[in-house]
Length: 245
Image (cartoon, rainbow, N blue to C red; front, side, top):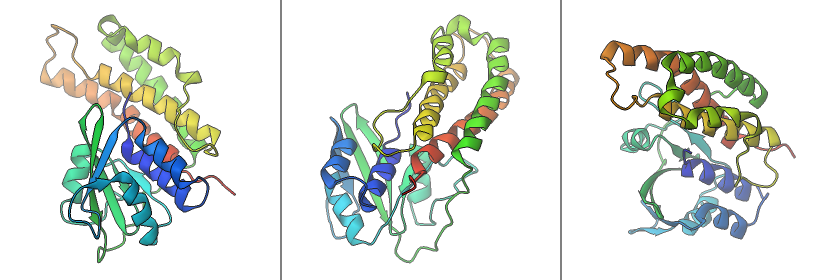
Protein backbone atom coordinates (compact mmCIF):
# COMPACT_ATOMS: atom_id res chain seq x y z
CA UNK A 1 0.00 0.00 0.00
CA UNK A 2 1.13 3.52 -0.65
CA UNK A 3 2.23 5.53 2.33
CA UNK A 4 1.34 9.20 2.74
CA UNK A 5 3.15 10.67 5.75
CA UNK A 6 2.27 14.14 4.45
CA UNK A 7 -1.39 13.13 4.53
CA UNK A 8 -1.11 11.88 8.10
CA UNK A 9 0.61 15.09 9.11
CA UNK A 10 -2.04 17.20 7.40
CA UNK A 11 -4.99 15.39 8.97
CA UNK A 12 -3.58 15.01 12.50
CA UNK A 13 -2.00 18.47 12.68
CA UNK A 14 -5.30 19.97 11.55
CA UNK A 15 -7.20 17.91 14.12
CA UNK A 16 -4.87 19.17 16.86
CA UNK A 17 -4.88 22.79 15.69
CA UNK A 18 -8.69 22.79 15.64
CA UNK A 19 -8.93 21.26 19.12
CA UNK A 20 -10.36 17.91 18.06
CA UNK A 21 -7.50 15.77 19.45
CA UNK A 22 -4.82 16.23 22.08
CA UNK A 23 -1.18 16.94 21.32
CA UNK A 24 -0.18 13.51 22.64
CA UNK A 25 -2.75 11.70 20.51
CA UNK A 26 -1.68 13.60 17.40
CA UNK A 27 2.01 12.95 18.02
CA UNK A 28 1.48 9.25 18.75
CA UNK A 29 -0.49 8.86 15.52
CA UNK A 30 2.20 10.65 13.51
CA UNK A 31 5.19 8.84 14.96
CA UNK A 32 4.05 5.25 15.25
CA UNK A 33 7.21 3.14 15.35
CA UNK A 34 9.12 5.47 13.04
CA UNK A 35 11.77 8.08 13.81
CA UNK A 36 11.03 11.52 12.34
CA UNK A 37 13.38 14.49 12.02
CA UNK A 38 12.62 17.89 10.52
CA UNK A 39 15.12 20.29 8.96
CA UNK A 40 14.45 23.90 8.00
CA UNK A 41 11.95 24.62 10.77
CA UNK A 42 11.95 28.36 11.56
CA UNK A 43 14.11 29.16 14.59
CA UNK A 44 16.18 25.96 14.32
CA UNK A 45 19.61 25.32 12.87
CA UNK A 46 19.58 21.52 12.82
CA UNK A 47 17.20 18.59 12.53
CA UNK A 48 14.59 18.50 15.29
CA UNK A 49 11.91 16.00 16.36
CA UNK A 50 8.56 16.09 14.62
CA UNK A 51 6.86 17.06 17.87
CA UNK A 52 8.63 20.40 17.74
CA UNK A 53 6.86 21.07 14.45
CA UNK A 54 3.40 20.63 15.97
CA UNK A 55 4.28 23.19 18.63
CA UNK A 56 5.87 25.51 16.08
CA UNK A 57 2.94 25.54 13.66
CA UNK A 58 0.56 26.59 16.41
CA UNK A 59 2.95 29.39 17.33
CA UNK A 60 3.04 30.43 13.67
CA UNK A 61 -0.73 30.80 13.67
CA UNK A 62 -1.55 27.85 11.44
CA UNK A 63 -5.12 26.58 11.48
CA UNK A 64 -4.99 23.66 9.07
CA UNK A 65 -2.79 21.77 6.64
CA UNK A 66 -3.73 20.18 3.33
CA UNK A 67 -2.23 17.22 1.55
CA UNK A 68 -1.02 18.11 -1.95
CA UNK A 69 -0.14 15.30 -4.37
CA UNK A 70 1.79 16.96 -7.20
CA UNK A 71 2.64 15.25 -10.46
CA UNK A 72 4.50 16.60 -13.50
CA UNK A 73 2.20 19.07 -15.17
CA UNK A 74 -0.02 19.55 -12.13
CA UNK A 75 1.52 21.24 -9.10
CA UNK A 76 -1.61 23.09 -7.99
CA UNK A 77 -1.56 23.83 -4.29
CA UNK A 78 2.22 24.23 -4.01
CA UNK A 79 3.36 27.75 -3.07
CA UNK A 80 6.07 29.26 -5.31
CA UNK A 81 8.91 28.82 -2.81
CA UNK A 82 12.42 28.04 -4.07
CA UNK A 83 13.16 24.32 -3.84
CA UNK A 84 9.69 23.23 -2.77
CA UNK A 85 8.24 22.09 -6.10
CA UNK A 86 11.08 19.78 -7.24
CA UNK A 87 11.31 18.16 -3.80
CA UNK A 88 7.54 17.73 -3.56
CA UNK A 89 7.43 16.24 -7.06
CA UNK A 90 10.16 13.77 -6.14
CA UNK A 91 8.29 12.78 -2.97
CA UNK A 92 4.91 12.91 -4.70
CA UNK A 93 3.40 14.66 -1.69
CA UNK A 94 3.55 17.66 0.61
CA UNK A 95 1.66 19.02 3.62
CA UNK A 96 0.88 22.68 3.00
CA UNK A 97 -0.33 25.30 5.46
CA UNK A 98 -0.47 29.08 5.30
CA UNK A 99 2.89 29.65 6.98
CA UNK A 100 4.77 26.40 6.40
CA UNK A 101 5.02 23.52 3.93
CA UNK A 102 6.59 20.16 4.75
CA UNK A 103 7.87 17.45 2.42
CA UNK A 104 8.67 13.94 3.71
CA UNK A 105 11.39 11.60 2.53
CA UNK A 106 11.64 7.95 3.53
CA UNK A 107 15.10 7.29 4.94
CA UNK A 108 14.49 3.59 5.41
CA UNK A 109 11.79 1.36 6.88
CA UNK A 110 11.94 3.08 10.28
CA UNK A 111 12.91 6.69 9.58
CA UNK A 112 11.39 9.69 7.81
CA UNK A 113 13.16 12.96 7.14
CA UNK A 114 11.13 16.13 6.62
CA UNK A 115 12.13 19.38 4.93
CA UNK A 116 10.26 22.46 6.10
CA UNK A 117 9.73 25.46 3.83
CA UNK A 118 8.69 28.73 5.51
CA UNK A 119 6.15 30.52 3.33
CA UNK A 120 6.85 34.05 4.53
CA UNK A 121 6.60 36.42 1.59
CA UNK A 122 5.32 33.74 -0.78
CA UNK A 123 2.32 34.65 -2.88
CA UNK A 124 -0.75 32.91 -1.46
CA UNK A 125 -1.88 29.93 -3.48
CA UNK A 126 -5.49 28.84 -3.61
CA UNK A 127 -5.83 25.20 -2.61
CA UNK A 128 -6.84 22.79 -5.38
CA UNK A 129 -10.57 22.65 -5.94
CA UNK A 130 -11.80 19.40 -4.43
CA UNK A 131 -15.10 17.77 -5.23
CA UNK A 132 -17.34 16.37 -2.55
CA UNK A 133 -16.39 13.00 -1.17
CA UNK A 134 -19.60 11.50 -2.51
CA UNK A 135 -18.91 12.79 -6.02
CA UNK A 136 -15.31 11.59 -5.87
CA UNK A 137 -16.45 8.21 -4.61
CA UNK A 138 -18.73 7.92 -7.64
CA UNK A 139 -15.96 9.03 -9.98
CA UNK A 140 -13.70 6.39 -8.44
CA UNK A 141 -16.32 3.71 -9.12
CA UNK A 142 -16.67 4.78 -12.76
CA UNK A 143 -12.90 4.82 -13.24
CA UNK A 144 -12.63 1.36 -11.70
CA UNK A 145 -15.17 -0.02 -14.18
CA UNK A 146 -13.26 1.35 -17.14
CA UNK A 147 -9.91 0.24 -15.71
CA UNK A 148 -11.20 -3.27 -14.98
CA UNK A 149 -11.84 -3.79 -18.68
CA UNK A 150 -8.36 -2.50 -19.45
CA UNK A 151 -6.80 -4.80 -16.83
CA UNK A 152 -8.66 -7.77 -18.29
CA UNK A 153 -7.50 -6.89 -21.81
CA UNK A 154 -3.92 -6.63 -20.56
CA UNK A 155 -4.35 -9.97 -18.77
CA UNK A 156 -2.70 -8.43 -15.71
CA UNK A 157 -4.04 -11.11 -13.36
CA UNK A 158 -2.07 -13.79 -15.19
CA UNK A 159 1.29 -12.43 -14.03
CA UNK A 160 0.08 -10.48 -11.00
CA UNK A 161 -2.30 -12.75 -9.05
CA UNK A 162 -2.54 -10.11 -6.29
CA UNK A 163 -4.71 -7.91 -8.52
CA UNK A 164 -7.98 -9.91 -8.29
CA UNK A 165 -7.70 -10.08 -4.49
CA UNK A 166 -7.14 -6.34 -4.24
CA UNK A 167 -10.12 -5.61 -6.49
CA UNK A 168 -12.34 -8.13 -4.70
CA UNK A 169 -11.77 -6.38 -1.36
CA UNK A 170 -12.58 -2.88 -2.59
CA UNK A 171 -16.08 -2.68 -1.15
CA UNK A 172 -14.83 -3.42 2.37
CA UNK A 173 -11.61 -1.41 2.27
CA UNK A 174 -11.26 1.05 5.14
CA UNK A 175 -8.28 3.24 6.00
CA UNK A 176 -7.09 2.98 9.61
CA UNK A 177 -5.07 5.49 11.59
CA UNK A 178 -7.16 8.64 11.08
CA UNK A 179 -8.68 10.86 13.79
CA UNK A 180 -11.65 9.25 15.56
CA UNK A 181 -14.13 11.85 14.29
CA UNK A 182 -13.04 11.58 10.65
CA UNK A 183 -15.96 11.09 8.28
CA UNK A 184 -16.75 7.40 7.65
CA UNK A 185 -17.07 8.04 3.92
CA UNK A 186 -13.55 9.48 3.90
CA UNK A 187 -12.24 6.30 5.55
CA UNK A 188 -13.95 4.20 2.88
CA UNK A 189 -12.79 6.38 -0.02
CA UNK A 190 -9.20 6.42 1.25
CA UNK A 191 -9.11 2.66 1.81
CA UNK A 192 -10.41 1.98 -1.71
CA UNK A 193 -8.07 4.52 -3.29
CA UNK A 194 -5.02 3.04 -1.54
CA UNK A 195 -5.93 -0.44 -2.78
CA UNK A 196 -6.38 0.91 -6.30
CA UNK A 197 -3.01 2.65 -6.10
CA UNK A 198 -1.48 -0.77 -5.42
CA UNK A 199 -3.40 -2.20 -8.39
CA UNK A 200 -2.02 0.54 -10.61
CA UNK A 201 1.53 -0.20 -9.49
CA UNK A 202 1.08 -3.83 -10.49
CA UNK A 203 -0.70 -3.03 -13.75
CA UNK A 204 1.99 -0.58 -14.83
CA UNK A 205 4.72 -3.16 -14.24
CA UNK A 206 5.52 -5.21 -17.32
CA UNK A 207 4.86 -8.93 -17.16
CA UNK A 208 8.01 -10.97 -16.46
CA UNK A 209 9.68 -11.80 -19.74
CA UNK A 210 7.09 -9.87 -21.73
CA UNK A 211 8.20 -7.87 -24.72
CA UNK A 212 6.20 -4.66 -24.34
CA UNK A 213 7.14 -2.10 -26.92
CA UNK A 214 6.92 1.65 -26.48
CA UNK A 215 3.56 2.06 -28.23
CA UNK A 216 1.99 -0.78 -26.22
CA UNK A 217 3.25 0.69 -22.96
CA UNK A 218 2.01 4.14 -23.93
CA UNK A 219 -1.45 2.75 -24.77
CA UNK A 220 -1.61 0.93 -21.45
CA UNK A 221 -0.54 3.99 -19.48
CA UNK A 222 -3.05 6.17 -21.33
CA UNK A 223 -5.88 3.72 -20.65
CA UNK A 224 -5.11 3.64 -16.92
CA UNK A 225 -4.50 7.39 -16.52
CA UNK A 226 -8.15 8.22 -15.68
CA UNK A 227 -8.00 5.76 -12.79
CA UNK A 228 -4.69 7.21 -11.61
CA UNK A 229 -6.18 10.72 -11.66
CA UNK A 230 -9.29 9.58 -9.79
CA UNK A 231 -7.17 7.81 -7.18
CA UNK A 232 -4.98 10.87 -6.61
CA UNK A 233 -7.96 13.20 -6.23
CA UNK A 234 -9.74 10.79 -3.89
CA UNK A 235 -6.70 10.34 -1.62
CA UNK A 236 -6.17 14.09 -1.28
CA UNK A 237 -9.84 14.79 -0.59
CA UNK A 238 -10.13 11.99 1.98
CA UNK A 239 -7.19 13.32 3.97
CA UNK A 240 -8.23 16.96 3.61
CA UNK A 241 -11.88 16.74 4.64
CA UNK A 242 -12.59 18.51 7.94
CA UNK A 243 -15.49 17.03 9.92
CA UNK A 244 -18.43 19.31 10.52
CA UNK A 245 -18.96 20.48 14.08
